[in-house]
Amino acid sequence: MRRIFPVAVVALMALSPRAKLDLIFQPGLTSKDEVSEISGRGVGMDVVRASIEQIGGRVELDNAPGKGLRIAIHVPLTLSIISAIVVGSGKQRFAIPRQSIEEIVTERGEAIRIDVLGGTQVATVRERRMPLLALANLLGIERGPRSDQHGGSQMLVIVGVSEGSYALAVDTVLDNEELVIKPASPAVMTTGLYAGQTLPDSGLPMLLLDCAGMASVAGLNFNRDAGQGFDEAEEAAEAPGVPALLFNDLDGMRRAVPLAAVDRVEQVSGEQVRFAAGRFRLAIDGRILPLAAQGEIEGRHRLNVLRLKDDMAEVSYAIDEALDIIILPRDISPAREAGPVAGVMLIDGEQVELLDVLWVFDEHADREVEDDAPLCLISGDQDGWMASFVRPLLESAGYRVTAHLAAGETAAVVLSSEDAPTPADASAPVVRLRRRRAAKAGDDSIYRYDRAGLLSALEARVAGKAGR
Image 1 (cartoon, rainbow, N blue to C red):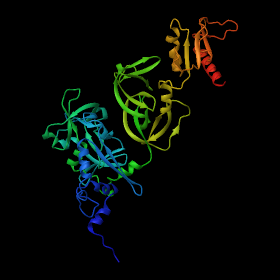
Image 2: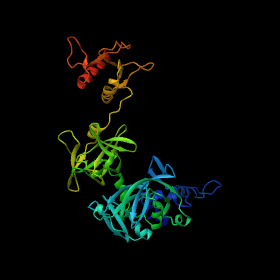
Image 3: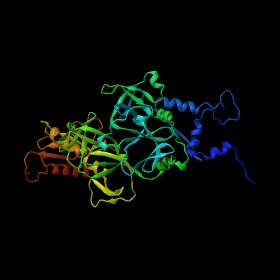
């Protein structure tokens, strides 16, 4: 006996998993059989999503059958100041909330392809297919000359909204700024294309684009069946692999670094870079960061730098140009010896080196003194020589240094001059510094300019105390 399904049931079964989840946001949808005073009217999640998108946020659903439904609500941390990417289209500039941007790529190479399916432009980014929206066409403005920096190719800003992701084609990507946002005039806001206006450092008023509003106005369809390829984005997102940033290095080599280690990519002035205290350092955000590089830094007026972070340290790494976001292949040939390169891999037929993040942090990160590091007490420093010259050496070697013990503190070792009286803390081993290079018979003091000898003596005294 053939079973006949109602039309609505058949249509529901034809929907993709993402489209089925999005039914939650349809006005009038309810799971109740009867309407009461407090439920059954189908007014709820559609209002929630509309309210969140009005403030620049989005709602994401993640359903795991048998486990439950996770609802993630993304809202701006503040409605007055946001981090935004400034883009150019024609002769005009616009801001896009940084939290809505997944990545920015250039339209070039085999990894990026533009097609037309059913009269709609589609961008394929590393086998991930999504709708393509040209900002100039949507806003009705004249296209400008494309940036020479990227070989005349347009830039694709991959934007994420609650329904899915789409590619926004712009002429140029100009800057990253923290912007103060306020509502625009009612006539502008009612278009559904803008989320507000701002006055950047240039002094020229600029509009903030509403990413969800642009998708709605353009009529983008994120729920086409798999035959047209739009659901491939979800499969690509679930594919295993480690994302990495592909870049051109200062020495001309093409390298990649795991994206998890990259906090941001910034352009800085050459005046912010100085060779000081034995290494290149970058002054940025009121701080001084060690600057690693493979290639010439001096003589450059502008530099692109990677801000690399782990849980405890931050290092900047100078590069020539950031290129793309890639997925690291499984096959990586390891380097034969430790150094700045961890290995080499094949990306689109080209040999690309993998930057060794562990080496970069080990060689360049400033060493911080741990709270439980051995405490060294400086005693008898009448002229301040040890505080001025020896203390920086000890702290860089991982010791905590003090001239006076606080209540309850105990020194692991005492550093004293040769003519100073015996320190009050006699329970701690003592290392004495002498002014003469040669030692007298039976003298176990250390010549005060012997760095290696001093650190070795301190280590031996601390280890001897700990072993008792």
